[in-house]
Image (cartoon, rainbow, N blue to C red; front, side, top):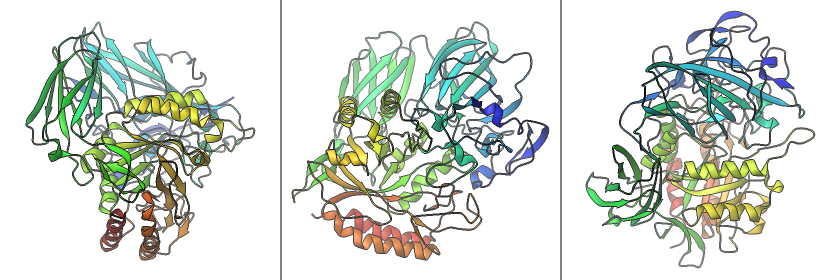
Length: 622
């Protein structure tokens, strides 16, 4: 059995000072190394002076009172044993762990201060040898005596065990979902928070998105360096003795249905809705787990669309506890247009979704953005280029990212992460049960996000052959109902089953015409991938690739304008399009940004592209 400790034997051999191109920190290291590529935001990072990602982490359910982001320096070291069900013994508390890491960046990321992308002469296995990255994290947290406190983890890949003062609080399985534990300290002051994480990456049956452990040493193709351990914000908040645990909001065009979960049954839950101007427009009362439909007057004034991303606030009070939510008035359904063609309908009207594929990977943070402003800039720029939809591909992003999409006005087609690729011999197939568990968690975590209007269950041929697809569609439809649409298999063989709402085909580099069947709307779910490579902004210098190479930005623009001219007439039947992609990622260099977030188009070229996209969005026959 190979563990990360074996592969890091040389990397942790001697004390040295490592400068990763951003900040200097003491760290045992085989040698001084530098980051291959760093964003401008990453270059400004200094965890010795400020906490990374310090914003309130849960914009969809804010609560006043004491809260604290626990990002920043933690003690850290590899764990030599343990698995997904049985962690190893806790490390001794009479001495610090061997290293330090900057949370929430994974150890594979330069911004973590660890950056384990170099393994000396050790080799990562290519067969199905049992493999996992096992890690310990530890830090002190300040708790007040006899005050209920909830400790939140926004993402840990893949399994996390959490301890407070040596006592196990619980564990969580799932690399893309949030979890938390309630504690009540008996003394005020410092308490020890310890976390053990276990991640087999592509040597397990769990969904993992585009992660591939061998990409650390051999980056190539459309799989990338992995993200292990803590990669989402860790934070705590103090709560009342009775408090609101969760709120589910079903969003319509003229009303919302609100269902409140509390720690103790409450019969007097107060709800107040305010419109985008701050005016109170509706109030109501309900009880724990009793759905209340709140009618919103003059709803047509503030419908949510990409052009008018109006958001309402919802204040919910239970005794001494108050949380503030937000919602939008919008629907996304299928319907028949005036020409008898099945289309997606936004707020009761035919809608063309002009999308871009977005994988939200970062050269210096892997799954974790260097800061919130950088994540916002990704969304803002693709909207500037004329896109009104992002297909978030094989990843679940932090809550703050979706909040930006809600505010900016960017529709999200949300992929379920896949058990992507299987290059091991013998193959390591996906676990159907783990997939279903993670799908349920993803839908629950993202239920209240207004901008998400469609779920994608499977991508291409990644894993779909291992599943009873009709059973999975029925399972998903049972959770989703008519709240959103479902794309059964984007660009994959299960399209031929004509299940759920979308007939979705992929074709690179240029899209093909299609005609929807069986009451589904037609989508060109992936195309494009024009590769223009900028020296000095490549993960591996001189080794970038794309589906259609361009010599420069004007060549990239010309190729896209020509392709769009041919594609626009296809809108007689096609109602959605997804161009690959927002950014370059490692050696896949077909983005509108480089991997380190340098725009490839000049301002004038971007305007020309946006003008053509505007024609596409209006191209469906009236």
